[in-house]
Image 1: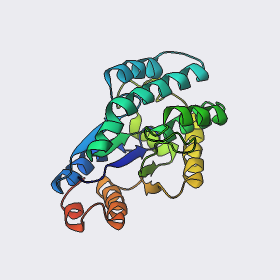
Image 2 (image 1 turned 30 degrees about the vertical axis):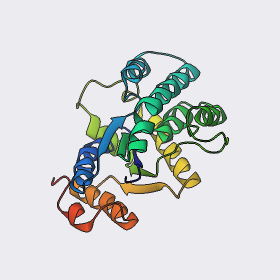
Image 3 (image 1 turned 90 degrees about the vertical axis):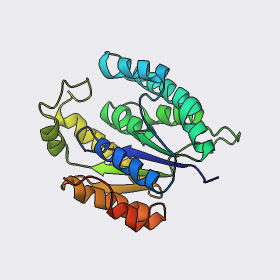
Image 4 (image 1 turned 30 degrees about the horizontal axis):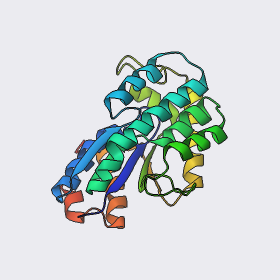
Amino acid sequence: MKQGLFISFEGIDGAGKSSHIDGLAQAFKAQGRAVTSTREPGGTPLAEKLRGLVLNDVMDPLTEALLIFAARRDHLQQVIEPALARGDVVLCDRFTDATFAYQGAGRGFDVNVLSTLEGWVQQLPDTAAQDSIRQPDLTLWFDLPPQAAAARLAGARVPDKFEAQPIEFFTRVASGYAHRAAEQPQRFARIDATPARHKVWQQLTQVLVRKGWLSIMVAANSGPMG
């Protein structure tokens, strides 16, 4: 059985990461891999209910963080860990890095508390070691200036409470992602999200080809054309 692979997609709202998840799922399937595509907050019936609260209801930062990690715990137990055990490729639209970027840097919440919650919630099921926590094998960070992201989002849909935040909030969120990437460079790959979609796709697939996870042929014949 093939080994499971966990890839997360990160970036501020409007960075365009979500549009590439389906393309990458099809590319892996073309190589014969089973793929589980999911998102956070969400991914299970319970976590989707908590997502609705987090995105729309007013609450203090600690309550927000607790709900997000509660959703993540259920998501890990019900979806991510079983999929990895089966040997699936798990593609997740956001994971814990988003919590450090949005709740930590964006809202100014204590990152030490977030780190504690991360250790509790993401502890690997087969070990009692405190430093053995589930993290993505690769995090694709779609880096886009907040002003450009805001222009993309303008008029696209009714914004949730995060999308409705001012540019200054997203500037802090972007800095939170940069800090997280600097702390864990071994799993982060920065993707310049400013060019056209096919140029972004080329960057993304080059990362996966270099890792030996995607063939050059499949990468060249998949993904967005626009």
